[in-house]
Image (cartoon, rainbow, N blue to C red; front, side):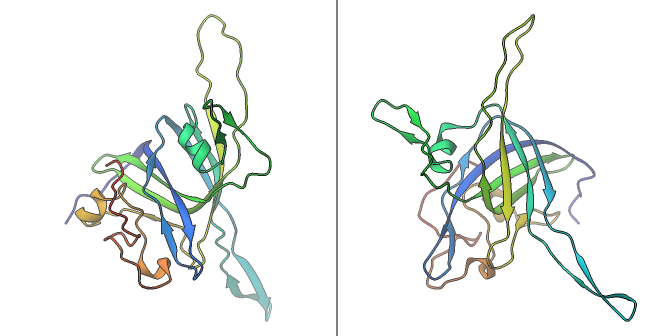
Amino acid sequence: MPKKNKVKFNICNVHYALLTLGADGAVSFGTPVAMPGAVSLSLDPNGEPSNFYADGYAYYTVSNNMGYEGDLELAMVPESFRTDVLKEALDENKVLLENANAETENFALLFEFDGDVRKIRHVLYNCSAARPTIESQTNEDEIEVQTETLSLTAAPLASGYVKAKTGDATTEEVYQNWYKSVYLPEAAAGGSGTDTEPGGTENDGTEGEG
C-alpha cells in the first residue's frame, strides 16, 4: 500500500490554464502557465444544503454545491495573467492598458500543497478572477513587501465537476503530467471527436512546466 500524507503545508507551484467552451459545449484547456510567488490561498465553499420539510421533519435535503469563493495572494500578479485572463492589453510601447469594455477569461487554477510524504496536487476547473486592489505604503525602518490579492470564484462546469486532486494511489503518469495538461475526466469534457491526453484534455503537442 502507498504511504499516506499525515499533514499538509505550504502552497506552491500555482499555474493557470485558459478555459475554452466549444459550440457543442465541449470543454478544453490551454497549456498551464506558471504563476510564481504564491503566498496564500483561502477558498470557502459556496452554497449550502437546503432542507425540504414534510411530515414534521427534514423530508429531503437538496445538495447545493456552487463551488468556492476566496482569495489567492501573490507576491505580484504576473503580466501573463493580466493579459491572458484580466485582458489588460499591451500597446506598441509595451505599456499595460486596462479597458472597462474588456471581458475577462475563465481559467483552471492548478496548485499543490506540500505533504510529509508527497505533494497534493489540485485543479479548480472553472475559475474567474476580479481585478486586484492597487495599494502600497511608504518605507519605514524596514522594507515591508506589498503583495497582490486576486479574488477568485470557482464555479462548477456544466458537467457538475468543480475540482480534482491527487490521492494516495494516483497513478504516476497522471501525477507527473499534472502541470503539462489539465486533468479532466471524459465525462466532463463533453463533445466528441477530440484527441485527448491521459488527463483528458485536448492534446496540442505542447508541454508546460513540470
